[in-house]
Length: 342
Image (cartoon, rainbow, N blue to C red):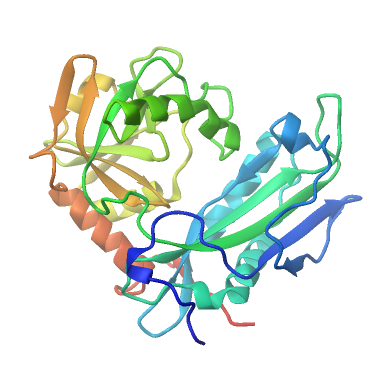
């Protein structure tokens, strides 16, 4: 297949139009067979619950082209389960796991020419989402839902690529409450953090590092990603909190960390511990790993290494995971799945 005419090596992490997306509707107690459409807009009732009461959730995953020319996804079954968890938490109808996987494959196959060539550093970003489309005026769940998957070719999440970013600890804005919806991927969590992120960027930082909403002393996560630190005695430490999203990337890194001789720990992390870490990083689907060069808290600043070079373990973990994702190294875990052409 002839690839789309794009400058693959210089793509940004933004929306680049593709040819098709797929949509399924839930009505009268069942999901339909779905349609493939070239429309990039959605007809929606003005009283839809997604517009008024936040019945909306989404996922993010990627497809890669391997050296052999196969197109593969990474841990797609975990994404299927996580979107179902998100749906259930805000009382939406979750798409069954088989439907989720079939829909993602359908969207990829309809847009195969947009899967970036192997070795370019780009990938096909996949955005599944579920929205409440049924009209309601009272605060209650919708009776109808739409499940949609669109794709777009992307480059690195940060323009600097695999280079350290600089964080500031956020104390005036809470991303999510411990008994709220911080552990699922709903849009409201990201909207809640926009003012903190924008203020941090205006002050010269890349992103914020959130503390727990209750005590304001334990690390939760960064703006768009989970957080981890590497201790002097080689522990891979990542926060355990009821208000952070269970990252599929982080879960994968925990497995790989053990292979590198690190000792993973998922536990409560006091903000003071940032001054004891040898390395720190953020991790998620979009960036995989973003090394952290410094963290500022009040009038104190912790610089990791020289502040401009990724740490040893961050570098090793990043290249190990991306090599598995792109098929350049064996996958002994069964994480990578070939997308069958149909």
